[in-house]
Amino acid sequence: TIQTDAGLRTPIVAVLGHVDHGKTSLLDKVRGSAVIEGEAGAITQHIGATAVPLDVVSQVAGSLVDPEEFDLPGLLFIDTPGHHSFTTLRSRGGALADIAILVVDVNDGFQPQTEEAIRILQDSQTPFVVAANKVDTVPGWQVDEDAPIKQTYEAQSDRVRQQLDESLYSIIGELSDAGFSSDLYWRLQNFQNNIGVIPVSAKTGEGIPDLLAVLMGLAQRYMKEEMEIDVTGPGAGTILEVKEEQGFGKTLDVILYDGTVRASDTIVVGGQNGPIVTDVRALLKPRPLAEIRTEKRFEKVDELAAAAGMKIAAPDLEDAMAGAPVRVVRDRDLDDVVEEVQAE
Ligand code: GTP
Ligand code: MG
Image (cartoon, rainbow, N blue to C red; front, side, top):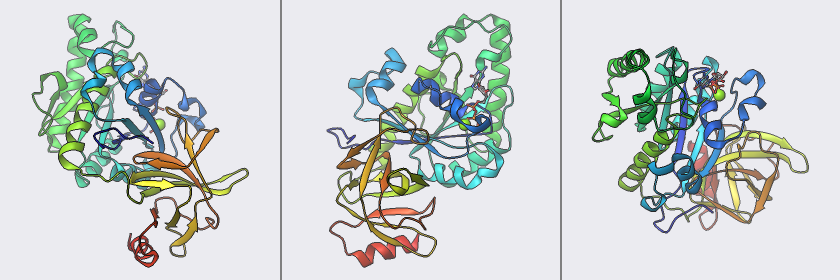
């Protein structure tokens, strides 16, 4: 289970943005794998979840993230689809998140689903940063693989830097039109009332150390100040997907955002014809850094703590619905839990 001494749970980080602006590629870069190659036409059609442990975050971020300074166990990233037909999935991802990355292609700027994502973040009051992606596409850009952005930004020619600045300031202008004050992240004193804009390239890895460092800082502050989360109580989660798995029948891909789930638990699950009461048959955990959508190998475990992506095998899941709640009963009154699920 992922939990630190300080008891802070793993923050959930939603990745939102317009189609093709590079959300999956950014996560791939962090993961060092290639989920993008497994997707139909490279268009994300589902919500995915990837747990990135603290040691990997600090490995990727280098000197920008000192693991000693953080109580967080790592970050749980939620990838969402940018295609216009997936509004419900985006809202679901946005609503689950503690913090978010809004990905904007520096060439395209704000697009319809960028604006939709902003509204989702505004409505759910989710703190976010902006990843201004694809900086490597500025003509004449000199690549400094995986470098912190300030270093590579300052090494560019004046002409390249000016062209990038133009794109970045138009993004800052569009954020201002949407009611957010923002600036390049290294110019900000605090992220409380300002949105940090981080130029990145998912292709070359430039700026990814900065993005992770800013996310860790934001998550640490936000989790400490705003959240007292019980990571040992009966679990609460949301169904991402209902899937047939060989040997298990219908299973649930779940994001657990509170408490724990045990292999011995009775759970209540939202279904098409009302709440389903069932017993967990197997609790399956994806490997760290694996993407739950494409993962084939799972480890059977006795218990998992929030926040985590997991697969739950149980009988009677035929009517379970994506987006519906999952609640662990444990020592609570079953009727109360059923009512809670019904009310959602
Ligand atoms: P949806 O899931 O469909 O919303 O798209 P997405 O936002 O996940 O975009 P994806 O990561 O699939 O990337 C779209 C295209 O942009 C792919 O061809 C990527 O290779 C390319 N791309 C992403 N990031 C970068 C980048 O930083 N630089 C360059 N040159 N290409 C990039
Ligand atoms: Mg994608």
